[in-house]
Amino acid sequence: MGLTDPDPPSGSEHVSGRTTGGDVGRVRWGTASLAVAVIAITILPAFMTGALAIRIGGDVGIDLAGIGGLYGVLFGTAALASAPTGRLVQRFGWESGIRAATAGTGIALVSMATFSDDWWAAWWPIAALFVLAGVAAAASQAASNLALVQSVPSDRYGLLFGLKHSAVPIAAMLGGLAVPTIALTIGWRPAFAIAAVLAFGTMLAVPLRRDLTDVAVGSRTPTHRPTTPISTLIALAMAAALGHAGIDALGAFVVPYAASVGVAEGLAGILLTAGSLAGLTTRLAAGWLVDSRQHAGLPWIAALLFIGSLGFLVLSVGGRPLLVAGTLLAFAGGWGWAGLLTFVVVRANPETAAVATGIANTGKYIGAALGPVIFGTLAEQVSFAAAWGVACAVLLAGGVLMMAIRLTPAGREMAASPTEQTP
Image 1 (cartoon, rainbow, N blue to C red):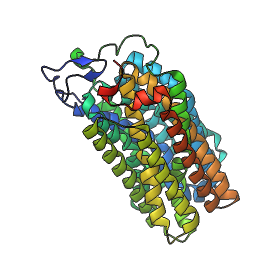
Image 2 (tube, rainbow, N blue to C red):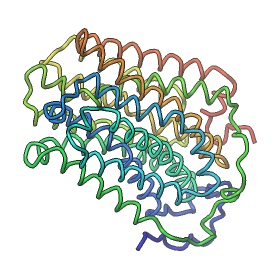
Image 3 (cartoon, rainbow, N blue to C red):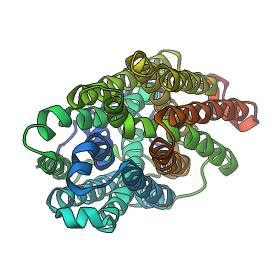
């Protein structure tokens, strides 16, 4: 039986997906929990493959460049599917989006657990599964954003969107924990099978129906253009692409890198978990600050990107002595800004949240697709130090672009507090 939410609080008015009148609405935790869970579940194929790369490579012969290529397939597909799935989710509802996303992810994971070594070694059957996982990941982002807009009062957007984006570090943590707890004990295939069970369980938790009073105005109507100019959303997508290119490479290769400098495989998995926890903590803290101030300027996002670039600089020059410090700093800054970006886009486009975030997320997936491929190749052909140095430059460029967007009229409008925004 699916999760059901309590009746909407009396006295609250839902307009354009938000509860108006200050903090008079209640968070619908059943829906919010699903919105977080679907993001963590649909990213597991990528992070688990990266965390288990040593074990998988030892069995089927895939090298770091091959693992990076699979990341590129998943996130490249997600980039192409992000805007179209956003329109579909806006039309058919977040419930349908979550069901489709978790079903697709579950099929991909169970197939990865059962495909033979020969099929893994052939690469293309696994790449086909990563295409399916990429479509699912794109749909999950749009569905999650729309679900939160329709179930969270606007003065709680910061914390809840921070919590939603903390699902990605949670997924990386699960991937890291899978190394010492499952892969080193019973094998890497059971780890994928357990993840598939989580995916199908989340699909079954989606409610079959809900009270129509919980449906936001316009949420089931045909989509229209977002309030924010498309050019600004594209510029934000470009900045997001730069930010994600570096940090997703870290999520993919921190375990192999730690092993290359002499860290035991199990401890390397724990390092990935610790870094993910640092990113999760930063996202939640940033969301809490947004709710307390009801303001999230684009310079906040740029500052976190600059901190992440510093972490990559430490990794590139520090080697094993500074491994922990560089990893924690890169994860905290490089992953800490994603919830803030969604916050400013959703708040500026409450009636078309799925469409607007679908456009902005296109850049995130482009970066996630290209980053692991480029950095995996650099690590394989040159060195990890060179890969982390390039990642440092990429995050720095993303922060600079975010500051440039802040100088445009649309950028100033998106970053303004509610009382400063044009009616």
